[in-house]
Image (cartoon, rainbow, N blue to C red; front, side, top):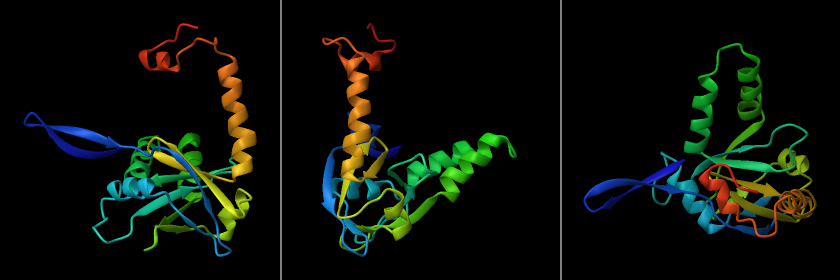
Length: 181
């Protein structure tokens, strides 16, 4: 989680910086794609080494063959994941698999001076990304999808989930514990 500080009635309070929103951007033949400006601000806040005028770093996790999107982590968010992996027993299958997923099947990079990511061919091919990329916020990460894949896979999952709930159900009930369905 990305934290900032603000003062409330003389007390310090942590304020979380989260990715929010969705947008679609063109991908050029070299794999360059603009990152939404609000996403860049969160990446900057989540990079302890970032300085004004610099370019923030991030880690893109591409995962195994079942994953059809790229998940982008701020440096702080990936450090939280790394800490949790490191807490697992050395040599355990869970630790080995999570290390493979988050260390081996990932790509550390940075935003360029013009606010773009350069996605290597390996990553673009992994999710069949061509001319357009769909960005969607996921709290302390954001995802990059091929727009058509997002529409067919994720929208279908969302609709299926919503269809299983009563028409008058308020999803906010999930935030208060067990929902009354």
